[in-house]
Image 1 (cartoon, rainbow, N blue to C red):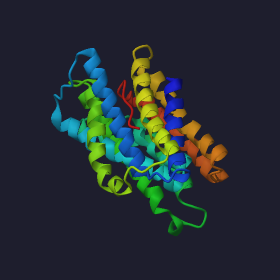
Image 2: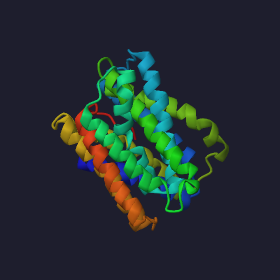
Image 3: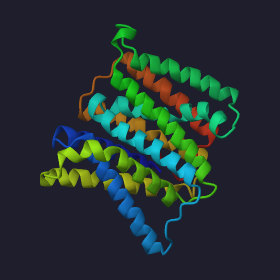
Length: 281
């Protein structure tokens, strides 16, 4: 599980490297991430002699659209506001899942989750709203936060789909619809890349898929509570990576907000027992 979190973080680093050093847009890297994952899922299904079956199609479409859009926004946000902020906003999904659960799955929200929600929004205020006031809020910050909301919806779709569909079918749906979402903005760039750029985008797809499979395998041996807690290693590692490797500025105020958000989301994730074997990223 720890290795999975590290690989997800390495994927995020590669997305920023591809954009800054190789000139590959976030939409292009997302395109390759989806294509490679789809190819590997199909190859795994062929090797297992177990064809993909899509049972609960309405919820598969929901998971695909919202999860694909969330992943695309995450890739784009990394190139615009940095790894640290993009990851923190995306990993607010346990909070959004908790708020949406009563409407989508008829679940009841526990008092502890309400406290976590209120606390998390306090932390988000410290991150999003600069010391200059509300007028200086970045629209990219709000877009990344919206990606976290979409991720929360996708997580609830996964929870519903685990009653009927395999993890391979669930992952394939995300990649299929995600590919449709990014294809239009990704197509104009073409495929005239340097060898280093090709290696980077290939690494992004492989890292994302391997991390996903590792996490799925790890959930066979550890509980949902421990797994959800270990998943929160990814934003912690990404904040440190952004500060060390890309010199992303993180003020003391924002850093304190990050700690509050991560703590609140960790509690919400543990309380809700997020579905085993799946990741939004």
